[in-house]
Amino acid sequence: MTRRRNLESHLRSMAEIRSVLNSMKTLAYMETRKLVRFAEAQGAVVESMENAAGELLISHPEILPEVADSATVFLVIGSERGFCGDFNRTLRQHLESAMDTLQLRAITVIAVGTKLHQLLDDLPLPLIRLDGPSVVEETNAVLNGVVEQLLAVQSEQGPVSLYGLYHAGEDGVVAQRLLPPFQHLQHQPQRFPHPPLLNLTPSEFLLELTDQYLFAALNQMLYASLTEENHQRVAHLDEAVRHLDDESEELRRQSNALRQEEITEEIEIILLNAPAQGKPAGAE
Image (cartoon, rainbow, N blue to C red; front, side, top):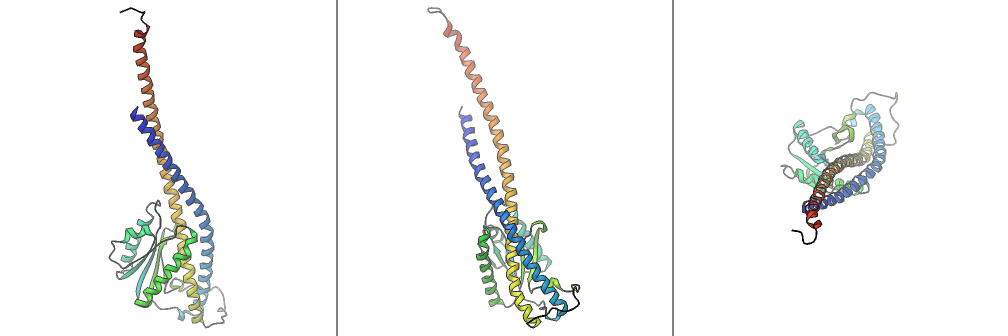
């Protein structure tokens, strides 16, 4: 009896846990649906800016900033919350791989997301910790914090080379160079016969565009990362719920088996006592 009661108590606890996990999964799914719209719109903004910069650089390649030896900053966008599998551990692996590939050692890391901080604490690098967004409405505050830290690093070390490291859905983990800007747009084929008409000088236009592009690209990274984080959270929690269902089914099977044993024992006791109860009065 005691064992069956313990099983039933365990089953009730597992049912409560399943309810919580299922609610978390539903919230993550709803946040993903909302983020997809933001990410798509922001991606279109970034693409239009890159197209404009590409057309400008075709006609005026000399205005593209040269890549010089400068301080290097990695902006690594992890998760603020857990229950998203190896989301943050994968970022650490790619950070170490990028450092080896680029032969970088003296770098500063801006780590976004409390869960990511815990995985990077042992790296022998200057580490700037920022809280990450949990929902899309918090991305603006995080973006402001990133910009403040970048300005602080620039004031101490001068111009920086900035790389963004983040999850980007089907593309996996992406390492994207943001500063100096538009390096990936060099040697683009010319699409129009005439250069763009500008009200500013080409260098002034590129400078103004760079500020807006950096803001838009950082927003896109945050949206893409948060979208993928919630995708992985949905998958992780869904697997956890299925595992709980399997465990609960096994516990119910064990509980039913114990109950059948108890019923059998009760019947045996009744049958054993039946002859004694059925003897005539005074019979030995």
